[in-house]
Length: 497
Image (cartoon, rainbow, N blue to C red; front, top):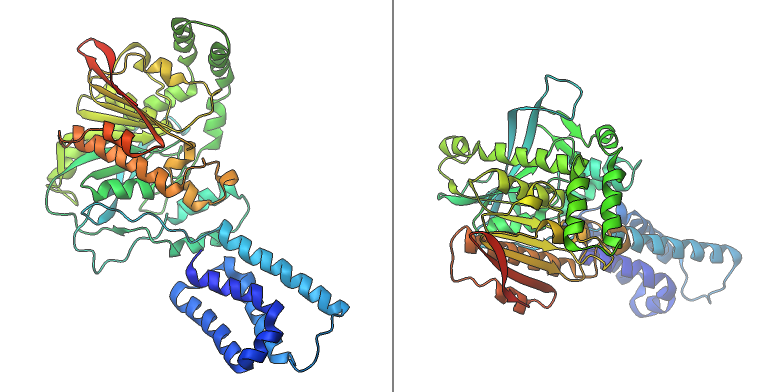
């Protein structure tokens, strides 16, 4: 909640119950001026929003009651007054509840040396679209690019999420509510500037892949910070498998629930053997054998490979984008990294196995479905997971057996949960609703960003002065194991905390 909102609600909460003795001290004029001042200042500097309507109504009732009250007469509780006070108490509870459930939240301010701009790219691919029924459809991706910006003084900050992503998010978590319920997000400061000029130099390129069925661009806290440290991030929107994609000509492509249902019909026959393998007293290799068979034909394995193709296709356009257009001479196409969250993290790792142009990859709390079980990475890899419960099947422990011929960083963000890497804990501040961990949202994002940026700086920008192990010493809520593989894989622990 914002400061003037808190002051307004505190005033309408306390004053109705102490207004008679307060009036003897201040008089009606000064009390009314003070209350009107609070309301006017809030409307001017913070702006109205529907979540504050109970507070506004309480303020009007309070002002009216002060006009009507005769403080010289003793207070006498009647039935009607009792009903009125009960109604006021209910309004007060609602007045505090709504702004806290739907807050105008604060995103972390970027700490890097650059302001951050965003730019949209509509990528029409030559790949067949396998999700729609039309066999002539070609895959089309909307990409949001986050980059180091220049000359932002005359440019307004972009609003938080576009209309399509707001609406689809609302329908997922609160179906049936009118779209206007998300208008309060206009007041969230994003710290990014749409179509601001790009700083006149080249930057390493990162491709980011979102989580399944999520807001593709709902990673402001994560991506803004990374871009501010000198990276151009191509934030993919995997069409029909994000909550929504809005194209420049007005077309909207929402999550395809019919396709999801059709693809997942047989999923349990793949999932159940894996779960059973973790419940039984089996050897490491026996579990890997079961996992190998169960993952064949699994819809998520197919999805991860499909998303990896989106990543690889996008990488194939980088030379053209660097040669002309908005990002002309701004992309270091020899320094390419990929990363993603959840299913997008798995897709990033799969893409790294498919494309030698990728120099590093990071998986944020995703299962590495795909081909990794019987191979190994040839590049530095970062895997950071949330703090899953002890009975959670650690599938990656089997998939990542061979790790990499290079560095492999295995991290865990303690007391976190899967959505802590997104903007969800800011957008939905109630832990039980957001399904986030106990970690402070700002701290969780800061640790994640610090780990990612250190990893990118060390292995993409080639800053050899960085020692990733120091992060494990800096943050008590970060566990890190560093492996170093040889030419045959054979990972050995480089350092353990």
